[in-house]
Image 1 (cartoon, rainbow, N blue to C red):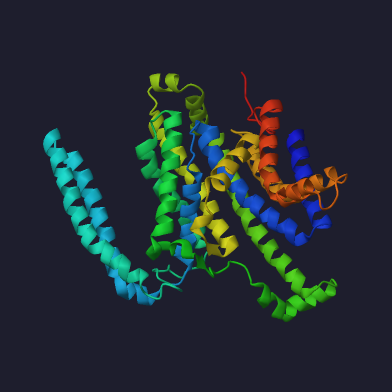
Image 2: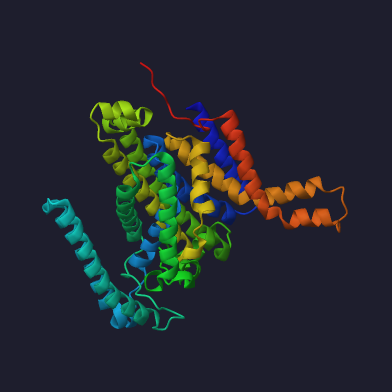
Length: 435
């Protein structure tokens, strides 16, 4: 406990130092992203720390959560719905009918050859219908004012509903992925989840009727006030003048504080849920399965089913964090989802913080994101200091300074190497209980 308090105190000191020596806007922007990163790390820890599931498809579930922000908060585009909305709905009905028919045939037909033949026939007929319905509807939607819309839009609801919907969407995708990939060996599971996440990103980039693809969706509504509205508020102006603050600058800080409050509440609720899950009898059983899967199977436990539950829960948490990230950015940009940022970096957070320990994973989310952002100015300062003995026009010095942004990759590698060497179980390792 003393180590945990000390580490979080140091983390708070680093954020405060950022506010003092750089700007409070920068410090709060980093803090908000730390909170979202901590939620992502918590979701991955539920999968890896609880059950040992090596999920390398975090990027895909994050993107699904981000898409939820568009589907919930963006207003519907009436012109595109008139052009091809019915076709998209009919396409969904066809897919659902084929899926339901296949399950029904699998459960009712006893003859194996006849069952396979009927399922194949059902898929062929459904595929033919889908081709004739989906592609014309897609082209009609994407051709409607494609420079500004060209997609169906969403439901026009408050964007905070997207956080729950993002968790539901990610959980549904995790159920499908889990049914396909769980039960495989850990390395095969990693390859499968990585491939599926790339498929998800490819769909989001190319299906413009759904997410505008690489044209991006901008102007998503906020759950907090806009800076310009605060600046025009007489109450806010009076409050700023009372404390001798610039209303323009303070409005940006106030908005970030509002985001911080919302994100912190969500993180605390999820932490409470994760801790209750971890210390429940069910959680102890899950950890027993993780530690000795063969013995758990011998005792009659359905290991694959337990893994599926945790895979769904962890993915739902990651999907919620993806929706929160889209909310913070105010836009959905499918091309920004890459494995380095949304898979590797989250895994580093869990490993550095301490896999199996929820609080450790949260601390890892704070620490790694802070260094990921601050490594560029820190790296530039170190390069500038170490090359003072060179002339300003020296090509070596100029080259190093021009590539200071790459210092973050070097720093992440060094942090990971040092932690795995001197603290292999993380900075706040999982507690082990001995009887």
